Every structure is written in C-alpha cells, then in structure tokens.
Image (tube, rainbow, N blue to C red):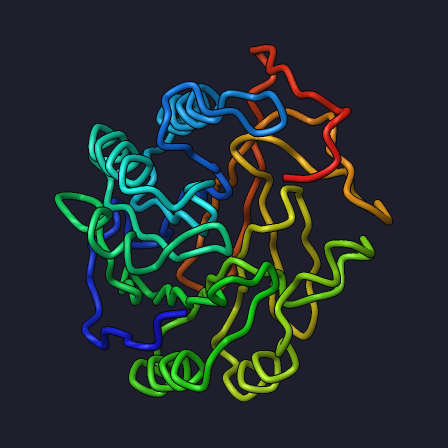
Length: 279
C-alpha cells in the first residue's frame, strides 16, 4: 500500500454545467503478454471492446475512472499497454490500485498525457476522490490512516462540492460469502467518516466483478462489472458468472443526484472456462 498521497487536485471543466458524465472501467486484469487470459478469456480483447462501447455513448464522458485490478500480473508491460490505449480515447483518465496491482509500478507507467495519477478531481459542482485500498501481498482491502485523512481533508477543503468516493474493495456486505471475506476490512471507519459529510453522495468500487447498487441515508453505494470475467452474485464459493463484460456510465447532477447505468458487451461472444475455480 502506498501512503504517500498527492494533495493537489486536478480540475476539469465538464461539457455541460448541469451534469458531470463519467465512465467507470474496472478489473480489466491485463497481462504482460498480449494473449494473456483470465479463466480462458483474453482480457485485452474484452477491455478494448468495453472501451469501444464507452466511446459510442451518446454523450462523451468528461472523464474515465479506472478502479483497480487493471493488471493481473502488475507488470510494466501491462500498464504501458493500458496507458497507450487510454490515451487513444483522448479522455482524462484517473486510476486507483486493486489487489492485483502494484501502486509503485502504476505510478511509473500510468502517468502521462491524458492518463493521470491525481487522486482528487474537481469537476463542475463535484469532487471525485480516489483512495488506495490495496494491501501489499493481500487480497482483502484496508484504508490506511493516511488514506482516511486524505479523504477527510479533501471533504473539508471543498465543503461546497458534492463528493464521489472511489476505491477498489467493496465497503459493504454483498451476501457472497467468499467475496465478503476479501472486502474492505475497515469499512466501518470509512462509513463513520462519510456520515459526517452530507455532501458525500456516492461510493464507487470494483473488485466484485458484478453490478451492485443500493441507497442508504442519501448515499449511493455502487459496484461495477469487470471489463472481463464476471463473478456469480450470491455465490458461497468462487464461481464465475455468465454475464458479459461491462462498464458503468454515470451522470452526476449539479443538485447532488447520481444516476448510472451498466452497459455490457452483448454483441460479441466471450469464451470463459467455467471449470477453473480461482483467479
């Protein structure tokens, strides 16, 4: 886990004053090798199909959020590929690490052109804060004191802005036994902090490879499908899902509302090996 956090925010002017449009891509699990496969699925093929679908949205996103497990093997080659590909989209792209990633390698290879390592985005009436929940050598997540302080300082610094908080690991129970064991271990601390700031309107993550959303006390809690293999909702043990790769498109309105929709790549056939019981 990297506790060094950059306090300088990055500011973008949205295309419209009344709504911020974001695309979330998560859990792409890119390998160093172009033919790298997760459960038999070529992750570069599915990632590129997801990006292509995102770019065909009626309204172009103002920014892209890439919320962890971007690489499967934490290799420089995987991150160089991601940096090159994201730059072809010509949309500011912000990222945070997952448990398969190396924050140090990401900092070196995912910080050029339109691919930015900033962890606080100011856009329209909103701020987006990206937290590092990764723990070196572990699958579960944890937010260090430095990360929690970074979040609180950002919320205090811009109290007039609505806030969307992003991380990799799920901070809520999703009723899938094996996944609930490897979520955010100090989720109570995050929830307690957030409860003190009424302008926090959403918490967004990846990790669980499935669509998940509920609203509690004015906050939207949202998870997004992987751009590659999915996990079966409600499963007791590891189980790959049958749904197609996907991403989330979010509208953040100037009155604090969040609306979002998941789009999947259902026009292409992706082969998954369901006999593999782990990843």
